[in-house]
Amino acid sequence: MEEGTSTPVLRFCGFSEDWRIVRLGSVLTILNGFAFSSSHAVESGVRWVKIADVGIHKMKKDNLSYLPVSFTRSHSKFILKKGDCVIALTRPILNSRLKIAMIDDEFDGALLNQRVGKIITSNHLPFIYYLLQQDRLVTIIESNIAGSDPPNLSPNEINGIQVTVPILAEQQKIAAFLTAVDNKIQLLEKKKGLLEQYKKGVMQKIFSQEIRFKDDHGKDYPDWKEGKLADVGIIIGGGTPDTSIESYWRGEINWFTPTELKSKYVESSVRRISQQGLINSSAKLLPQGAVLLSSRATVGDVSIALTDCCTNQGFQSIVVSKSNVNEFVYYWLKLNKHQLLKNASGSTFLEISKAELGKLKINVPSLQEQTKVANFLSAIDDKIKYVTTQIALTREYKKGLLQQMFV
Image (tube, rainbow, N blue to C red; front, side, top):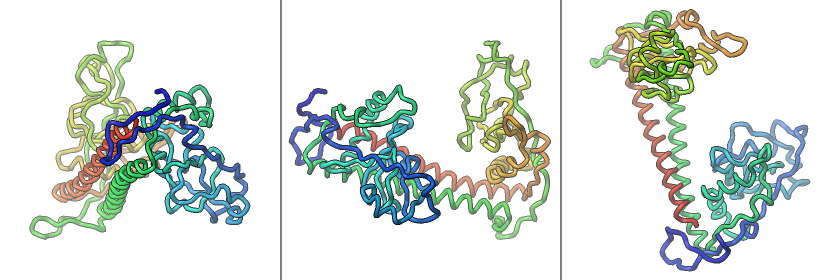
Protein backbone atom coordinates (compact mmCIF):
# COMPACT_ATOMS: atom_id res chain seq x y z
CA MET A 1 0.00 0.00 0.00
CA GLU A 2 1.52 3.31 -1.09
CA GLU A 3 0.69 6.71 0.32
CA GLY A 4 -2.23 8.32 -1.46
CA THR A 5 -5.97 7.67 -1.31
CA SER A 6 -8.27 4.67 -1.17
CA THR A 7 -11.83 3.69 -0.20
CA PRO A 8 -13.37 0.72 1.69
CA VAL A 9 -15.86 -1.79 0.28
CA LEU A 10 -18.65 -0.85 2.69
CA ARG A 11 -19.49 2.81 3.38
CA PHE A 12 -22.27 4.85 4.92
CA CYS A 13 -24.41 7.01 2.67
CA GLY A 14 -23.37 10.64 2.41
CA PHE A 15 -19.62 10.01 2.33
CA SER A 16 -17.68 10.06 -0.93
CA GLU A 17 -14.29 11.47 0.02
CA ASP A 18 -11.29 9.21 -0.53
CA TRP A 19 -9.57 7.85 2.56
CA ARG A 20 -6.02 9.06 3.10
CA ILE A 21 -3.21 6.51 3.16
CA VAL A 22 -0.85 7.52 5.95
CA ARG A 23 1.66 6.04 8.35
CA LEU A 24 0.36 4.89 11.72
CA GLY A 25 2.90 7.07 13.50
CA SER A 26 1.18 10.15 12.09
CA VAL A 27 -2.19 8.97 13.40
CA LEU A 28 -1.37 8.09 17.00
CA THR A 29 1.26 8.08 19.72
CA ILE A 30 1.51 5.82 22.74
CA LEU A 31 2.08 7.04 26.29
CA ASN A 32 3.85 4.34 28.31
CA GLY A 33 2.76 3.97 31.92
CA PHE A 34 4.83 4.73 35.00
CA ALA A 35 7.04 2.14 36.72
CA PHE A 36 5.18 2.01 40.02
CA SER A 37 6.81 -0.27 42.60
CA SER A 38 4.92 -3.30 43.88
CA SER A 39 5.91 -2.16 47.38
CA HIS A 40 3.49 0.76 46.96
CA ALA A 41 0.48 -1.53 46.55
CA VAL A 42 -2.32 -1.08 49.10
CA GLU A 43 -5.53 -2.95 49.94
CA SER A 44 -7.74 -0.11 48.72
CA GLY A 45 -7.19 3.21 47.01
CA VAL A 46 -6.95 4.19 43.37
CA ARG A 47 -7.02 1.41 40.82
CA TRP A 48 -3.73 0.46 39.23
CA VAL A 49 -3.96 -0.69 35.60
CA LYS A 50 -1.39 -3.41 35.00
CA ILE A 51 -0.77 -5.38 31.84
CA ALA A 52 -2.85 -8.30 33.15
CA ASP A 53 -5.88 -6.00 33.34
CA VAL A 54 -5.91 -5.39 29.58
CA GLY A 55 -7.88 -8.12 27.87
CA ILE A 56 -8.94 -8.62 24.28
CA HIS A 57 -11.27 -5.69 23.63
CA LYS A 58 -12.26 -5.40 27.29
CA MET A 59 -10.81 -4.62 30.70
CA LYS A 60 -10.39 -7.59 33.03
CA LYS A 61 -11.55 -7.33 36.62
CA ASP A 62 -10.48 -10.63 38.17
CA ASN A 63 -7.22 -9.49 39.81
CA LEU A 64 -7.47 -5.83 40.76
CA SER A 65 -4.60 -3.85 42.30
CA TYR A 66 -4.54 -0.49 44.09
CA LEU A 67 -2.16 2.38 44.80
CA PRO A 68 -2.41 5.16 47.42
CA VAL A 69 -4.87 7.90 46.41
CA SER A 70 -2.10 10.47 46.95
CA PHE A 71 -0.37 9.10 43.84
CA THR A 72 -3.03 10.74 41.67
CA ARG A 73 -1.52 14.11 42.64
CA SER A 74 2.13 13.19 42.15
CA HIS A 75 1.50 11.17 38.95
CA SER A 76 -1.42 13.01 37.36
CA LYS A 77 0.03 12.46 33.89
CA PHE A 78 -0.82 8.76 34.20
CA ILE A 79 -4.44 9.10 35.32
CA LEU A 80 -6.85 7.30 33.00
CA LYS A 81 -10.37 8.47 32.25
CA LYS A 82 -13.44 6.66 31.00
CA GLY A 83 -13.21 6.48 27.21
CA ASP A 84 -9.41 6.32 27.10
CA CYS A 85 -7.90 3.50 25.06
CA VAL A 86 -5.13 1.31 26.47
CA ILE A 87 -2.99 -1.38 24.86
CA ALA A 88 -0.73 -4.09 26.24
CA LEU A 89 2.89 -3.42 25.26
CA THR A 90 4.33 -6.79 26.28
CA ARG A 91 2.89 -9.90 24.63
CA PRO A 92 0.24 -7.65 23.06
CA ILE A 93 -1.25 -10.34 20.82
CA LEU A 94 -3.05 -13.50 21.91
CA ASN A 95 -4.47 -15.94 19.36
CA SER A 96 -4.07 -13.33 16.59
CA ARG A 97 -6.09 -10.76 18.54
CA LEU A 98 -4.74 -7.52 19.98
CA LYS A 99 -4.96 -6.83 23.71
CA ILE A 100 -6.59 -3.43 23.49
CA ALA A 101 -9.50 -2.01 25.48
CA MET A 102 -11.47 1.10 26.28
CA ILE A 103 -11.41 2.32 29.89
CA ASP A 104 -14.86 1.82 31.43
CA ASP A 105 -16.57 3.18 34.56
CA GLU A 106 -14.77 0.78 36.90
CA PHE A 107 -11.31 1.94 35.78
CA ASP A 108 -12.17 5.64 35.51
CA GLY A 109 -9.47 7.53 37.45
CA ALA A 110 -7.05 4.58 37.54
CA LEU A 111 -3.28 4.97 37.24
CA LEU A 112 -1.40 3.59 34.24
CA ASN A 113 1.44 1.15 34.92
CA GLN A 114 4.51 0.57 32.76
CA ARG A 115 4.17 -1.81 29.79
CA VAL A 116 0.61 -0.59 29.33
CA GLY A 117 0.21 2.17 26.79
CA LYS A 118 -2.40 4.89 26.46
CA ILE A 119 -3.23 5.77 22.87
CA ILE A 120 -3.19 9.48 22.08
CA THR A 121 -4.60 10.78 18.80
CA SER A 122 -6.10 13.87 17.20
CA ASN A 123 -8.42 11.57 15.27
CA HIS A 124 -11.62 10.09 16.70
CA LEU A 125 -10.28 7.73 19.39
CA PRO A 126 -13.00 5.04 19.10
CA PHE A 127 -12.29 4.85 15.37
CA ILE A 128 -8.58 4.29 16.07
CA TYR A 129 -9.56 1.61 18.60
CA TYR A 130 -11.41 -0.31 15.88
CA LEU A 131 -8.77 0.44 13.24
CA LEU A 132 -6.20 -1.39 15.38
CA GLN A 133 -8.43 -4.46 15.61
CA GLN A 134 -8.22 -5.27 11.89
CA ASP A 135 -6.80 -8.70 11.13
CA ARG A 136 -4.45 -7.22 8.53
CA LEU A 137 -3.01 -4.74 11.00
CA VAL A 138 -2.68 -7.26 13.83
CA THR A 139 -0.84 -9.64 11.49
CA ILE A 140 1.65 -6.91 10.52
CA ILE A 141 2.21 -5.94 14.17
CA GLU A 142 2.73 -9.58 15.13
CA SER A 143 5.28 -9.99 12.37
CA ASN A 144 7.11 -6.80 13.37
CA ILE A 145 7.50 -7.80 17.03
CA ALA A 146 8.41 -11.43 16.32
CA GLY A 147 11.90 -12.43 17.36
CA SER A 148 11.99 -10.74 20.75
CA ASP A 149 11.25 -12.67 23.92
CA PRO A 150 8.91 -11.57 25.27
CA PRO A 151 7.42 -9.76 22.26
CA ASN A 152 7.31 -6.02 23.02
CA LEU A 153 5.39 -3.33 21.20
CA SER A 154 7.10 0.02 20.74
CA PRO A 155 6.74 2.98 18.33
CA ASN A 156 9.55 1.59 16.17
CA GLU A 157 7.47 -1.50 15.39
CA ILE A 158 4.28 0.30 14.39
CA ASN A 159 5.05 3.86 13.27
CA GLY A 160 5.83 2.84 9.70
CA ILE A 161 2.73 0.71 9.17
CA GLN A 162 0.47 2.22 6.52
CA VAL A 163 -3.20 2.69 7.32
CA THR A 164 -6.12 4.51 5.71
CA VAL A 165 -8.28 7.06 7.52
CA PRO A 166 -11.38 8.97 6.43
CA ILE A 167 -12.56 12.43 7.45
CA LEU A 168 -13.55 12.91 11.10
CA ALA A 169 -17.31 12.70 10.47
CA GLU A 170 -16.99 9.30 8.79
CA GLN A 171 -14.69 8.11 11.56
CA GLN A 172 -17.40 8.99 14.08
CA LYS A 173 -20.09 7.23 12.05
CA ILE A 174 -18.09 4.03 11.73
CA ALA A 175 -17.10 4.01 15.41
CA ALA A 176 -20.69 4.59 16.57
CA PHE A 177 -21.93 1.64 14.50
CA LEU A 178 -19.20 -0.72 15.70
CA THR A 179 -19.73 0.43 19.29
CA ALA A 180 -23.39 -0.60 18.97
CA VAL A 181 -22.24 -4.05 17.82
CA ASP A 182 -19.83 -4.28 20.77
CA ASN A 183 -22.63 -3.27 23.14
CA LYS A 184 -24.74 -6.14 21.82
CA ILE A 185 -21.86 -8.55 22.41
CA GLN A 186 -21.44 -7.25 25.97
CA LEU A 187 -25.16 -7.68 26.68
CA LEU A 188 -25.07 -11.24 25.38
CA GLU A 189 -21.96 -12.00 27.47
CA LYS A 190 -23.70 -10.59 30.53
CA LYS A 191 -26.77 -12.72 29.82
CA LYS A 192 -24.58 -15.80 29.49
CA GLY A 193 -22.83 -15.01 32.76
CA LEU A 194 -26.15 -14.61 34.58
CA LEU A 195 -27.41 -17.92 33.19
CA GLU A 196 -24.22 -19.68 34.28
CA GLN A 197 -24.48 -18.12 37.72
CA TYR A 198 -28.14 -19.18 38.00
CA LYS A 199 -27.27 -22.71 36.89
CA LYS A 200 -24.52 -23.00 39.50
CA GLY A 201 -26.82 -21.81 42.27
CA VAL A 202 -29.73 -24.01 41.30
CA MET A 203 -27.47 -27.08 40.98
CA GLN A 204 -26.27 -26.56 44.53
CA LYS A 205 -29.86 -26.36 45.76
CA ILE A 206 -30.99 -29.40 43.76
CA PHE A 207 -28.19 -31.72 44.87
CA SER A 208 -28.45 -30.54 48.48
CA GLN A 209 -32.20 -31.31 48.16
CA GLU A 210 -33.15 -27.77 49.10
CA ILE A 211 -35.12 -27.86 45.85
CA ARG A 212 -37.19 -30.98 45.13
CA PHE A 213 -39.29 -31.89 42.13
CA LYS A 214 -42.78 -33.35 42.18
CA ASP A 215 -44.34 -35.93 39.88
CA ASP A 216 -46.87 -35.12 37.17
CA HIS A 217 -49.66 -35.38 39.73
CA GLY A 218 -48.05 -32.91 42.12
CA LYS A 219 -46.96 -35.58 44.58
CA ASP A 220 -43.56 -35.86 46.25
CA TYR A 221 -41.03 -38.33 44.96
CA PRO A 222 -39.49 -40.85 47.39
CA ASP A 223 -36.57 -39.74 49.57
CA TRP A 224 -33.12 -39.77 48.01
CA LYS A 225 -30.91 -42.71 48.94
CA GLU A 226 -27.29 -42.39 49.96
CA GLY A 227 -24.88 -44.64 48.16
CA LYS A 228 -21.46 -44.69 46.52
CA LEU A 229 -20.56 -43.63 43.04
CA ALA A 230 -19.64 -47.25 42.26
CA ASP A 231 -23.32 -48.12 42.83
CA VAL A 232 -24.63 -46.00 39.95
CA GLY A 233 -22.66 -47.79 37.24
CA ILE A 234 -19.49 -49.56 36.22
CA ILE A 235 -16.27 -47.55 36.45
CA ILE A 236 -13.88 -48.35 33.59
CA GLY A 237 -10.36 -47.06 33.02
CA GLY A 238 -8.81 -46.15 29.68
CA GLY A 239 -5.86 -47.37 27.71
CA THR A 240 -3.56 -46.48 24.83
CA PRO A 241 -2.66 -48.83 21.97
CA ASP A 242 0.99 -49.07 20.98
CA THR A 243 1.70 -45.82 19.13
CA SER A 244 4.50 -47.44 17.11
CA ILE A 245 2.08 -49.76 15.31
CA GLU A 246 0.39 -47.68 12.62
CA SER A 247 -2.41 -50.19 11.94
CA TYR A 248 -3.70 -49.66 15.49
CA TRP A 249 -4.40 -46.02 14.60
CA ARG A 250 -6.19 -46.56 11.30
CA GLY A 251 -9.68 -47.39 12.45
CA GLU A 252 -13.11 -45.94 13.12
CA ILE A 253 -13.31 -46.22 16.92
CA ASN A 254 -13.25 -42.82 18.61
CA TRP A 255 -10.39 -42.56 21.12
CA PHE A 256 -10.68 -39.55 23.40
CA THR A 257 -8.07 -37.70 25.45
CA PRO A 258 -8.88 -35.41 28.43
CA THR A 259 -8.20 -32.26 26.39
CA GLU A 260 -11.20 -33.12 24.18
CA LEU A 261 -13.72 -32.86 27.02
CA LYS A 262 -14.75 -29.29 26.23
CA SER A 263 -18.52 -29.64 26.16
CA LYS A 264 -21.37 -31.65 27.65
CA TYR A 265 -21.40 -34.07 24.73
CA VAL A 266 -18.53 -35.41 22.63
CA GLU A 267 -19.04 -37.28 19.39
CA SER A 268 -15.88 -37.26 17.31
CA SER A 269 -12.30 -37.61 18.53
CA VAL A 270 -9.11 -36.25 16.98
CA ARG A 271 -7.59 -39.72 16.76
CA ARG A 272 -9.25 -43.09 16.12
CA ILE A 273 -8.14 -46.63 16.69
CA SER A 274 -8.81 -49.93 14.94
CA GLN A 275 -10.45 -53.07 16.31
CA GLN A 276 -6.97 -54.60 16.35
CA GLY A 277 -5.69 -51.68 18.44
CA LEU A 278 -8.55 -52.16 20.87
CA ILE A 279 -7.98 -55.88 21.28
CA ASN A 280 -4.22 -55.55 21.77
CA SER A 281 -4.31 -52.83 24.44
CA SER A 282 -5.86 -52.05 27.80
CA ALA A 283 -8.38 -49.75 26.09
CA LYS A 284 -12.02 -50.65 26.67
CA LEU A 285 -14.95 -50.06 24.34
CA LEU A 286 -17.46 -47.78 26.05
CA PRO A 287 -21.09 -47.62 24.92
CA GLN A 288 -22.92 -44.54 23.72
CA GLY A 289 -24.03 -42.54 26.77
CA ALA A 290 -21.00 -43.39 28.91
CA VAL A 291 -19.91 -40.56 31.21
CA LEU A 292 -16.27 -39.79 30.35
CA LEU A 293 -14.37 -38.44 33.34
CA SER A 294 -10.84 -37.11 33.24
CA SER A 295 -9.08 -38.68 36.20
CA ARG A 296 -5.53 -37.47 35.60
CA ALA A 297 -4.00 -33.95 35.49
CA THR A 298 -7.24 -32.13 34.54
CA VAL A 299 -9.19 -34.05 37.16
CA GLY A 300 -12.94 -33.56 36.97
CA ASP A 301 -13.43 -32.58 33.33
CA VAL A 302 -16.46 -34.54 32.17
CA SER A 303 -18.53 -35.19 29.05
CA ILE A 304 -21.10 -37.68 27.77
CA ALA A 305 -20.18 -39.82 24.76
CA LEU A 306 -22.65 -39.71 21.87
CA THR A 307 -21.02 -42.72 20.19
CA ASP A 308 -19.30 -45.94 21.17
CA CYS A 309 -15.73 -44.98 22.01
CA CYS A 310 -12.51 -45.57 23.91
CA THR A 311 -10.41 -43.31 26.09
CA ASN A 312 -6.75 -43.05 27.02
CA GLN A 313 -5.38 -43.96 30.44
CA GLY A 314 -6.20 -40.48 31.80
CA PHE A 315 -9.83 -41.51 32.32
CA GLN A 316 -12.09 -43.31 34.77
CA SER A 317 -15.34 -43.44 32.82
CA ILE A 318 -18.72 -44.51 34.15
CA VAL A 319 -21.14 -46.73 32.26
CA VAL A 320 -24.29 -45.71 34.11
CA SER A 321 -26.73 -48.50 34.98
CA LYS A 322 -30.26 -48.55 33.56
CA SER A 323 -31.67 -47.68 36.99
CA ASN A 324 -29.93 -44.30 36.82
CA VAL A 325 -29.73 -41.37 34.38
CA ASN A 326 -26.35 -40.58 32.84
CA GLU A 327 -27.09 -36.84 32.68
CA PHE A 328 -27.91 -36.81 36.41
CA VAL A 329 -24.50 -38.39 37.12
CA TYR A 330 -22.85 -35.92 34.72
CA TYR A 331 -24.29 -32.91 36.57
CA TRP A 332 -23.39 -34.40 39.96
CA LEU A 333 -19.78 -34.81 38.83
CA LYS A 334 -19.70 -31.25 37.47
CA LEU A 335 -20.87 -29.89 40.81
CA ASN A 336 -18.58 -32.07 42.90
CA LYS A 337 -15.27 -31.54 41.12
CA HIS A 338 -13.85 -30.39 44.46
CA GLN A 339 -14.48 -33.87 45.89
CA LEU A 340 -12.63 -35.47 43.01
CA LEU A 341 -9.66 -33.16 43.54
CA LYS A 342 -9.73 -33.78 47.28
CA ASN A 343 -9.43 -37.53 46.72
CA ALA A 344 -6.82 -37.29 43.96
CA SER A 345 -3.14 -37.84 44.67
CA GLY A 346 0.21 -37.96 42.90
CA SER A 347 3.59 -36.24 42.93
CA THR A 348 4.00 -35.63 39.18
CA PHE A 349 0.31 -34.93 38.49
CA LEU A 350 -2.94 -35.41 40.35
CA GLU A 351 -4.92 -38.56 39.64
CA ILE A 352 -7.99 -40.13 41.19
CA SER A 353 -8.03 -43.91 41.11
CA LYS A 354 -10.94 -46.18 40.25
CA ALA A 355 -11.14 -47.28 43.89
CA GLU A 356 -11.20 -43.72 45.29
CA LEU A 357 -13.73 -42.60 42.70
CA GLY A 358 -16.02 -45.48 43.52
CA LYS A 359 -15.96 -44.62 47.25
CA LEU A 360 -17.39 -41.13 46.77
CA LYS A 361 -20.76 -40.75 48.46
CA ILE A 362 -23.67 -39.69 46.29
CA ASN A 363 -27.32 -39.13 47.14
CA VAL A 364 -29.54 -40.51 44.41
CA PRO A 365 -33.29 -39.90 43.87
CA SER A 366 -35.71 -42.14 42.01
CA LEU A 367 -35.22 -42.66 38.29
CA GLN A 368 -38.18 -40.37 37.57
CA GLU A 369 -36.80 -37.52 39.67
CA GLN A 370 -33.32 -38.00 38.18
CA THR A 371 -34.91 -37.53 34.77
CA LYS A 372 -36.64 -34.31 35.87
CA VAL A 373 -33.40 -32.97 37.34
CA ALA A 374 -31.50 -33.81 34.16
CA ASN A 375 -34.16 -32.28 31.91
CA PHE A 376 -34.33 -29.09 33.99
CA LEU A 377 -30.56 -28.54 33.96
CA SER A 378 -30.33 -29.52 30.29
CA ALA A 379 -32.86 -26.80 29.46
CA ILE A 380 -30.61 -24.23 31.14
CA ASP A 381 -27.63 -25.61 29.21
CA ASP A 382 -29.58 -25.23 25.98
CA LYS A 383 -30.20 -21.55 26.77
CA ILE A 384 -26.51 -21.03 27.56
CA LYS A 385 -25.56 -22.77 24.32
CA TYR A 386 -27.97 -20.57 22.33
CA VAL A 387 -26.54 -17.36 23.84
CA THR A 388 -23.00 -18.64 23.25
CA THR A 389 -23.88 -19.18 19.59
CA GLN A 390 -25.32 -15.67 19.37
CA ILE A 391 -22.10 -14.24 20.80
CA ALA A 392 -20.02 -16.16 18.24
CA LEU A 393 -22.24 -15.05 15.36
CA THR A 394 -22.15 -11.41 16.46
CA ARG A 395 -18.36 -11.51 16.78
CA GLU A 396 -18.14 -12.98 13.29
CA TYR A 397 -20.44 -10.23 12.03
CA LYS A 398 -18.16 -7.64 13.63
CA LYS A 399 -15.12 -9.30 12.07
CA GLY A 400 -16.74 -8.99 8.66
CA LEU A 401 -17.48 -5.33 9.27
CA LEU A 402 -13.87 -4.65 10.22
CA GLN A 403 -12.77 -6.23 6.94
CA GLN A 404 -15.22 -4.26 4.78
CA MET A 405 -15.47 -0.90 6.58
CA PHE A 406 -11.70 -0.39 6.63
CA VAL A 407 -9.12 -0.55 3.89
